[in-house]
Image 1 (spheres, rainbow, N blue to C red):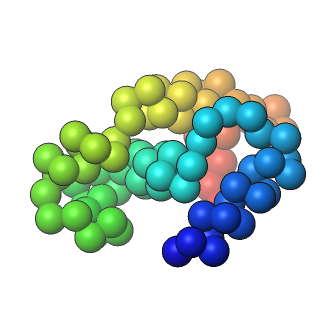
Image 2 (image 1 turned 90 degrees about the vertical axis):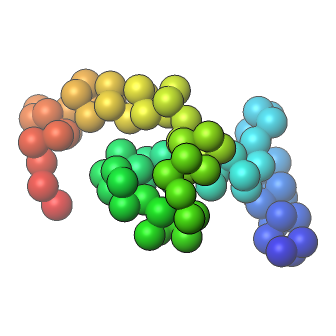
Image 3 (image 1 turned 135 degrees about the vertical axis):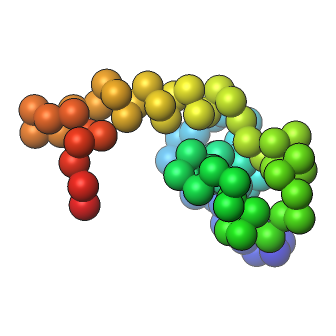
Length: 86
């Protein structure tokens, strides 16, 4: 785990990212985005026992609002991205 943390810091610095972020920040964002799709079943992905733990510590409403806004506003090839199915 120590090697992963050091590698993350190395690449973060190499990318010129000055914002105070960590692996924890990425985990929270990943879980929040997954929750956008999985809703009540997010615990299956994260192995958390209750939705209360996820909502209290991992689901970030600010990130969700950004994801939702992006789904509506980001256009790819002139179409609304929420209409594209990959």
